[in-house]
Image (cartoon, rainbow, N blue to C red; front, side, top):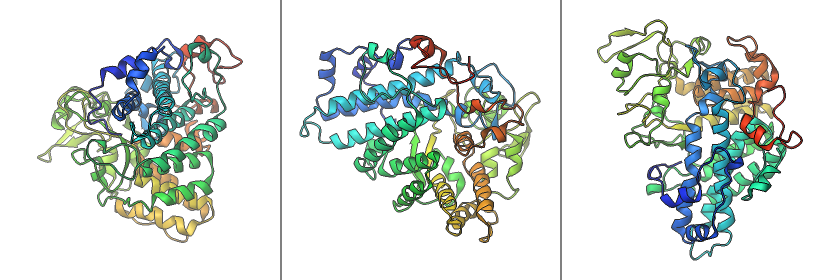
Length: 485
């Protein structure tokens, strides 16, 4: 997702799409005059597309709270009174502002995509030569939003047209299966047929055919449709992507374009368009942040668990950048610096990047990369009884990590366990682990005896925002998720 120029948001976009936390699904009345003014030329639609990206970008600032901290590879080692710590301890309640913000941001993006899609149908092809691409891009973004929403909240309202406020109050939660079959899958299918294979100039970073196919493969895997997952992920392997030779290059933010890149949420530090990840994941130790060139203090919100730290073999080339060095760091002279007590003793280096001001880092968020595709394809093949074909894919990841490869004589169960382990080692702190646990039905089994423990299976879903439940105030169409107050 390129945000190269979009950090300077066009005033007309904000006039068209103001934010309002009190209104359901961000429904703001829009005058006909404003609509007709905005949606006329190709550039108007391109500018409107920028308005869809903005809330998605803001939402991915916090995606790690759902995808990482909730699971066992990450924790808030020094407990705090904030959403990240509550998610880690399974005490996040429906009144938490994170949930309301998450809901509103996704539905702001969905509303904006719906508005663009509605208006572009009326546009003349001559006036809007990129019409097919804009439709595909808007539907890609809408599908991405719905995919995240159902994985976080379960049943959600299915909205594919701009609604009036009275209509919104009557819109029920729709079953997850229908969201997948009626919106997510069709949207990604339109996206893969209408997006471009690559972009140039300021468009670099927009979703491509490969991004649509890769995330659709993840969708099928999440649904447990291994046949379709294998087929779709196989298509991605024909598009020219390759594993980079050095794992560390994946997290070099001076060179964000490489053969493994598929789709990122992109940030550009130094112009108030950076990400919060560098500060958010660092220990709160000034000598350490100063050494790494990080302005401001570390929040230590997303630290590697001791369990994850110990899973890495000593010679695994992914270890240091994934889970740092327990208890400290080495400076440029090789001098050891100990992290003080009562400060997080672990840290990931995947998001360490020099930033001139706090929370203004160039570190991107990887929505999906080719290493993930390789492991998902291995999983799908293994579940489809093609274990012998899955193991070489798994071993390609191991080979890059510099560790011994798995024997080709493993059976399906052994290969399944190996893939689970390899996904943890390869994709830690990339928002994957929690959703892997949930989609495989292992979340409660794995997390019930952890510290802090997951006390019940219903916690695989997060509570709906209390503000939305109270606003609709109709349990027949908009009930809270079971067992949440």
